[in-house]
Amino acid sequence: MKRAFLIILDSVGIGAAPDAARYGDAGCNTLAHTAAAAKGLTLPVLERLGLGNIPALIPGGELIQGVPPAAAPIASYGAMRERSCGKDTTTGHWEIAGLELSQGFQLFPPGPPAFPSDLTHTFESRTGRALIGNQAASGTAIIDALGPRQLETGEWIVYTSADSVFQIAAHEDVIPLPELYQACQIARELCNAYRIGRVIARPYEGQPGAFHRTSNRRDFSYPLPEPTVLDRLVSRNIAVCAVGKIEDIYDHHGLSDSYHTSNNAESQAKLMELVNTFDAGLVIANLIDFDMLYGHRRDPIGYAHALEATDRFLEAFLAQLTPDDLLILTADHGNDPTHTGTDHTREYVPLMVYQPQKSGRSLGIRDGFFDIAQSLAYGFGIPRLSRGTSFM
Image (cartoon, rainbow, N blue to C red; front, side, top):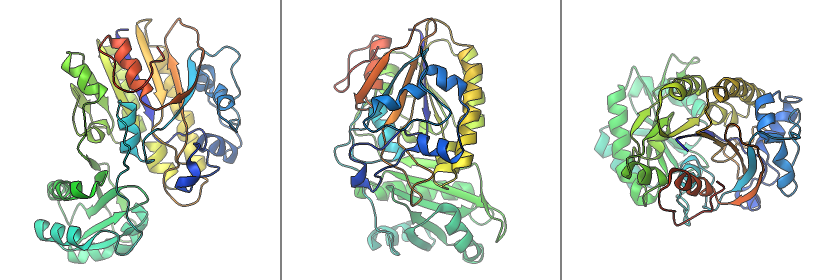
C-alpha cells in the first residue's frame, strides 16, 4: 500500500449502538431515518461500495431506502461499535486514530448557569470581557437571541450543548478574530482542569434578524493523552496530510501538512487535488456539513442532499485511485436529523474499505473504531498498536 485516504463522514451513523439508551438515543438511525424522510436516497456509488449491505450485519438493522444491498460490493463493508465513553467528535476521531477513552469528557447542565462560577469568573478576568449566555443552546438560536446585546456591550456569548464543549460566539465587527482566538486559547487552558473536550470559536456577522456564522470557526481540543497512529506514522517519516477540521481535533499533532477547509465542497475539492498530487502516505479528511449544517439543525432533507452530493464526488474520486491505494470511508458518531433534541446520537458507524481491482467482503461488526488505526499500521508496515484488530 502506497497511499491511504481516510474520509470521515461526520455524523453519518447507521443504527443505534447497543448502549444507545444510556445516552437517550434508543431507536436512532441517521442513515435509515434520513432516507425515509427523503423518501429514498440516490447513492449509486455508495451502493456499489456496499453501504446497503451493512444494515443486515447489525442486530435490528434498518434498511436504507433507495440503497439496497449490492450483489457483489466493490468494497469490503462492515459496521463499527465505539468502545469509548461519549458520542462527540473528539472521542470518535481519537478512537479512529487508536485511542480509547474509558472516562468521558465532562458534561454540564443546561443552565443557566451551565459552567462553574470559578471557570467563568477566571475567563472573564483573563480576557477582560464579561460573558452572557452560560447555558446549553443551539448556536444559531443563541446568536439570534443575544447577538443584539453583544453588539451593544461587547460581552462574550458563551454556551454549551449536550456534548463537552465551551463555545464562544463573537461578532467579527465587535470582537476581532485574533482576540476571539486568543480568548479560546485562554479558555482551553482553563477548561483542561474540567476535562472539557473542545473549546470552539464561533464567529458570526450580520445585523439583528439576519445574523449568520462565518467560515472562521476554530476548534481547540483537549490535549491528547497518548500518541495516535498519526504520530507513529510521522515519526517513521510517513507523510500524514489533514483536510478539514482534522488539525484542530488532533491538536495539530501527528501531521506533516494540513489544509483547514470549512465545508464539504472545499474538502472534496482539496481531496480531488491531493489524489493527483500526494505521492505517498495517509490523507485523513473530515466532511463536516452532515453534522454542522443538517444533523444539529434536524434537517433530514438537507442531510439527504449532502449525502447525494458526496456520492457524486466519490464517483470522480474513485476513478483517480490506483491499485496501490486504499480508501476507507467511515464516521465518528451519529446525528439522526429526525431524533429529539439537537445533539449527536450514539450509533454504529459504517465502514467501507476500497482497494481498486480487489473484490469486497464482509468485515462484520468491529468492536472498536481503533480497528482502523490498527489496519493503517499494518498497511504501512509499522509496529502494531496496543488496541484493535486489523481488517487488512
